[in-house]
Image (cartoon, rainbow, N blue to C red):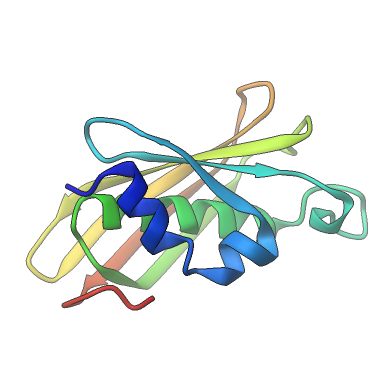
Length: 136
């Protein structure tokens, strides 16, 4: 398993998630589950004034990918499904990425997204193909 600093060094090469969207890796537990934070601004809102689904998806996808990398698993997504459970409240969102099962070629996992109040607002399920080395 990689250290938190090694995960950050690698994953911050994902310029869309890190620089454009603003996702920041906060922590990692002993199982390699990575928590990512997104401080919200008006740029993350849709035309209705709520956080855009694409921003939520990016946060969750980045959390899953960071968790996979933390566990030494390099992947490229082959299927993702997200359930939007509720509108988020507050000034930030967090997402916790995890691996459910890592087979020889297919990895199953996902990420849960929470608003500032701790309410789960989305759940991402991912099936990914295992690759030889990091793509970024």
